[in-house]
View 1 (spheres, one colour):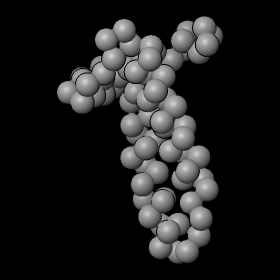
View 2 (spheres, rainbow, N blue to C red):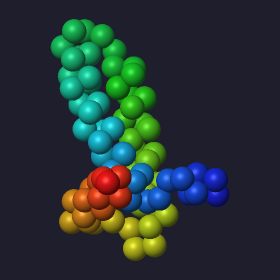
View 3 (cartoon, rainbow, N blue to C red):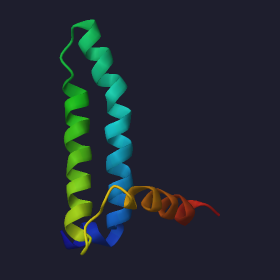
Amino acid sequence: MGQLSKYLDSELALVLGVVFALLSIPSILSAVTDGRSPRASALTILIAGGLILYAIQTNPGGYSIGDVPHAFVSVVARFMP
């Protein structure tokens, strides 16, 4: 787990988890309406949940719902020139 924390801090993990979870919703709905099983969407939801769980566990104070927008702004600002 030490190598992962070198590249992935808790805010980035939280943002990626939320984005993956939100992007998998249309895929789930599409699979269900077409009568297919949402295997890829389920895997994406598991990955998103793992990232969010990692973020909550590695941040000493945890996260509240109000902290999520601040995390998004912080991560976007980090990657903008």
